[in-house]
Amino acid sequence: MVKELSSAGRFTFIGSSLNVNRMGYGAMQLAGRDGNKLVWGPPRDVDEAIAVLREAIASGVNHIDTSDFYGPHVTNQIIRKALFPYPEDLVIVTKVSSRRGEDGSWIPALSREELTGAVHDNLRNLGLDVLDVVNLRSMFNVHQPAEGSIEAPLTVLAELQQKGLIRHIGLSNVTPAQIAEARRIVPIVCVQNQYNLVHRADDALIDDLAGDGIAYVPFFPLGGFTPLQSGTLSEVAARLDATSMQVALAWLLHRSANILVIPGTSTRKHLRENLKAATLEIPAGELAELDAVSRQDADASTDRHEHRS
Ligand SMILES: NC(=O)c1ccc[n+]([C@@H]2O[C@H](COP(=O)([O-])OP(=O)(O)OC[C@H]3O[C@@H](n4cnc5c(N)ncnc54)[C@H](OP(=O)(O)O)[C@@H]3O)[C@@H](O)[C@H]2O)c1
Picture (cartoon, helix red, strand yellow):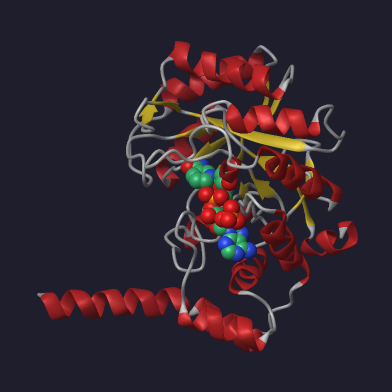
C-alpha cells in the first residue's frame, strides 16, 4: 500500500523540508457526536479510531490534518495515543481560531491570549515542542470565506513562530484578498478552504496558488457531513469499477499538482477505500464529464432560480 499511495505523488511545502504524500488524512471525524453537537466528545469506538490512524501511517500517509478544537482536545489526544512517538516524516497540520461553546458551537477565539492558549493546547495534547504547520482560520463568517483584515491574529501567530513554537503558517476559510494581506506579513505555505467536485468557488485561486508553489488543501473533499451525490459521479464510478468517493478523490488529485487531499473517516473500511484512490486513473473523457458536474449544478440552480422569479 505504501507503494500504491506514492502513485498520488508528493509535495514539498514551500520554503520547508516538509515533504508529504499528496494522499493524506483528515482527523476531524475521529471525535464523537452528542446529539446535535458535532465533532464533540470521544468517538463511539476509540479502538477503531486508533486503528484508523495506525493503518493510515502504515499505508504511507505522512500528512494528518487536525485541530485542538475537534472534541475539543479529543482528536489530538487520540493522535498522540495512537502515534507517539511520531514517525520522523509525519507532518501534522493543525488550526486555530475557535473555542467550543457548551452547545457545540464554534466561537471565534482570535485574541492574543486565545491564540497563544490554542497553540499551547495543541503542543500539549499532541505531545510536541513545536508545531509543523498552524493554519489560521478566518472567522468573519464561520461557514465560508468573508472579507475582513486578518492582520492582528496573523501577527500573533508570526510572533509565536519567531519564538520557535510554530515552523510554518497556513490559512483557512480565506479570500484571495486575505491571502495577499497575509503574504505581506509572513510566508504562507498552504491554504485550506472548502472545495470538491461540486463546490468549486476556488478554481481560479487554486491555479494562482499553484503558480506560487503554495499547497491547496480542500476540506470536505468528499462533501463533509453529507457525502457528495451526483449522477455523473455515480455513472463514472460504475464505469471505472470504482466507488464515487474514490473518483471524487482521484479527480481532486488530478485537478492540480498543488492539491493535497485529507479525506476524513472514522473507519478502516472507508480509509482503505479512500487510499486506493491514489492509484485510480481517470480517462480524459470521464475527466471532462466530471469537470462539467459543477457547471450542470450551476445551470440547474440558475434554472430553479429563473423558474421561481
Ligand atoms: N479548515 C476547516 O474549516 C475545516 C472544516 C472541515 C474539515 N476540515 C478538515 O478536513 C478534513 C476532511 O473533511 P471532513 O472529514 O469533514 O469531510 P470529508 O472528508 O469530505 O467526508 C467525511 C465524511 O464522509 C464519510 N466517508 C469517508 N470515506 C467514505 C467512503 N469511502 N464512503 C462513504 N462515506 C465516507 C465519513 O464517514 P465515516 O466516518 O463513516 O467514514 C464522513 O462522514 C477533516 O477531517 C478536517 O481535518 C477542515
